[in-house]
Length: 313
Ligand code: A2P
Image 1: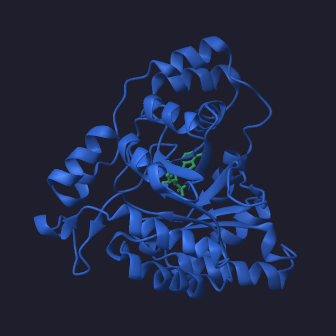
Image 2: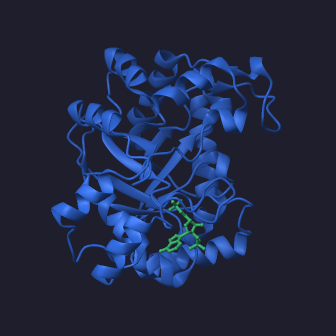
C-alpha cells in the first residue's frame, strides 16, 4: 500500500506484516529465530512497540539478517514501532523514539505510532490501574512532537493506533502532517465498518491488528479461527480459516499485522493472493456476530476515559 505522507517522499508499506507481541513474552532466542525465519519466508514489515519488549529482539534479528545476507540493506524492511502511553507527553516523545531506535539498532523507523489514545501515569507497574493514572492525551502537543520526529528524519511516517472518529477529527483539525495510518483491532468478528469508512474518507490507511482474533494468546480467543461460517468457506476453497480471514481483511482495503512464530503458519499467512472471495462468501462474512476481543476497560479497569474510548471502538 502507498501511504499518504507529507513531502515528496512516497511511503510504501507491505500489505502483510509480522507482529512481535506475545504474552508471556517469547524468549529472546525464540523471537529472534522466528523473525529471521519470517524474513526468509518473505515478510518485510515487522510491527513492534516499546511496550512489547520485543524491540531489542527485532533489532538483533535485523542485524543478523544483514550479516547473513538475507537482506542486502535495512531499507528493504518496513519497521513500525509505537510511543508507549506512559511517555505520551510532548517532552518525552523524542527521548522515546531515540530509545526505540537504540533498541532496534536503527537510524530511522518507517512508521512511528501513538500506541494508545490516552496517557498513563509513569508509575503504572501493573494492570488494572488506579483511576487517576489514566489521563487524557494532550493530543496537540504530543502530535507536534511526533511530527518533529518525522521532520528530524527519525520516522519516515507517523500515525496512531486505537483512535476513534472523534479523536481523529480533533487530530486532523490541527495536524500539519496528518496521520498516515490508524492501527486497529479488526477482523471478521470485529469489523469496525463505521470507523474504517471514516478513515477512508480522511485518507487515513487502516492496518488491522489481531486479524485472527489473537487466537491462542492470553487476551484473544477462537471467535475468528473457530467460526463455523469461515471454516465452511475454507473447506470449500481448500484454504485454512486463517487464510480466508486474512483474505477478507485484505479485500476490505485494510493491511495486516499478524503474528505467528511457527514456520508453517507464518508462510500460510502470506499465501493469500492467489484467490478472491466470491460476493456470496464476502456477504456471509460481513454478517458474522460481532464482538471486540480486547477492551481497554478489561486491561485497565472501568475508568471513564477508557470506557468512552471502548464504546467508540
Ligand atoms: P502461533 O504463533 O503459534 O502461530 P493475530 O494475528 O490475530 O494476533 O493472532 C495471532 C495468534 O494466532 C497467535 O497465537 C498465532 O499462534 C495464531 N496463528 C497465527 N497464524 C495462524 C494460522 N495460520 N493458523 C492458526 N493459528 C494461527
